[in-house]
Image 1 (cartoon, rainbow, N blue to C red):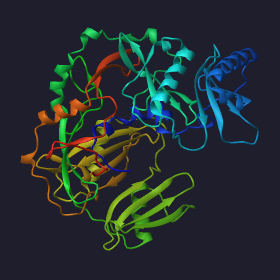
Image 2: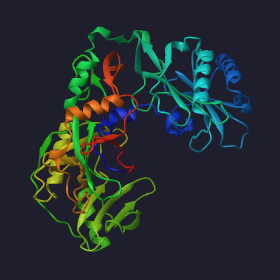
Image 3: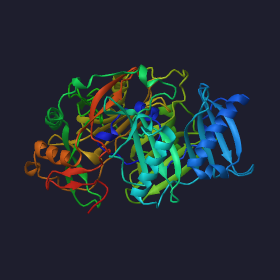
Length: 504
């Protein structure tokens, strides 16, 4: 995983994990068989309603008729029914998965799963017409209150339609449509991949939407955006120079009523460490196993864990990994020539409770600071917190810290720490990260100002007003966002747009 100091990468993973995957755009197809957690019989009356809805859908999506075999599965809290349609009994792919309302039998969304990623050669403008025509025929001339989102990324013949409330798009009620190379609808998906979708059965009319009059003028927010324009230093893609780059450093949503970041402004704060510069040297597999055993409480000399060793000639690091069929028990990287350990990861084998998120973010942060302080060199007394995430699947907090040069974050100097949210156990430490090349840093005195960078950025990515759900999911706030998830930066030396990872 590439370590980035990007504002869009900084959102709490709680939100990201909960978001509906916009498979239309990403091309990732999730098996409905993997999603279901409950099965049972579906009554005949409901089956007939669903089949009638599928027949209607087949008039708009002709390939539906090519999959005559149907399997009905109750899904989650029984508000949805999955219908898997196949051509035959012994065929895994392709097949169609449809999600139907358990009460009305109405098809809410569907996807054609082929077992491969989605690409389309159908012309963009023609595909857009196909998608809009489908929306009008399926939901009615008003498209069910949805409108085409003109900021949809122009790739893969995929499109977003957002629910409009008070003339303002609602981020959490979004539909995605993709058109395949034959000009047929491949997906009717829920969500945009960036924000958590409202629950399938949630009544939008019961959500309280903020009065549009509460929003500050866009011009006012644009002025305030300057404070979020944080330059940072990053190594160019060819590895030959450092660049000073601008990109707005906020969670992606600015509260329209106040101009403040919707996510608590925890980032880009200076963190004080007490570095002890402890060195760990491993000269053998046995010494590595002993070190990981002390960190995890697991005896690597027993059990049936498999061992794997890899070497990276580019950075001179060797990786030792112990794993079972299901999970990694321990892993560490060390310098091949010196045996000096630069990072390790372990499974918290002493974890007893399955309680989720017992620690707060701030409590976990203190464990991360203490863990890193043991190994950091004496020069790393102060670093900036540049990213933090809560990963629900692992019940773990993940923190990224970056070194500074003249107050500017150095992107490829990231040190990492992961903390088990139930026990406070530090499960990953990486104190040896960073580029080893001795390259000069940019002359920051020659950089364009944050005001200049903001003005240039907004010319290409203008702010737009949206509704966005609060955490309680009972009200929608007004927020300003930069549509299209801009992945470009502005080179502070030239004032030109630059895409980190793609050199001109």
